[in-house]
Length: 179
Image 1 (cartoon, helix red, strand yellow):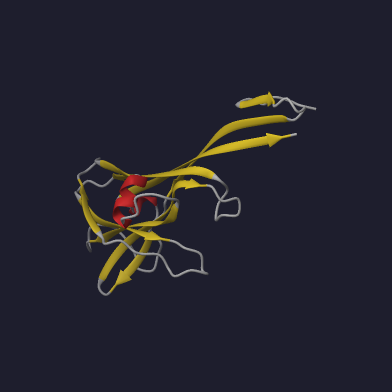
Image 2: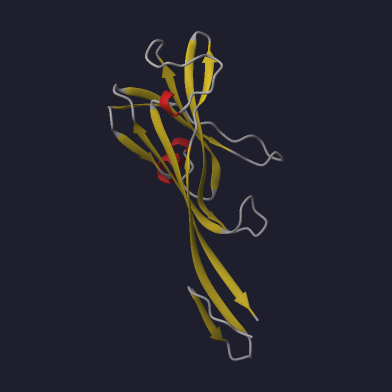
């Protein structure tokens, strides 16, 4: 029995075998919660954001075969300029050496200003031009005492954030069917 599904092209190859190729797109959006860390006398909001970039073709890879993209959107929701750092960390299997960590890059956003970090930006941070990569972009915001009503040891809530960080994940899946 052969049913054509939306997005699926079905063909008979002449040997009474049916071949089909389909494409599917998935997307997920995640708001990233900051973690409050104390570094000496400095409080820092840390936003660890997972990324997946590039085409994964291995059947037994860390994720299913697809072409993955991540876009990290950052907006300053505070009334003052916010300076933060970003770095990329490559994650590898525990059977391998840990991945490289990029240098920290300083950014400043004015009130209501936003920026996006995409796969090309992540590749530039890590100096890895091609291939499938996965890991974390880490955004760190030093908190000036007296600016935010943060209690040390308490995870900041929505009202305590100076940045809103949202990750958008997309994956283009190729599907093959044979009968």
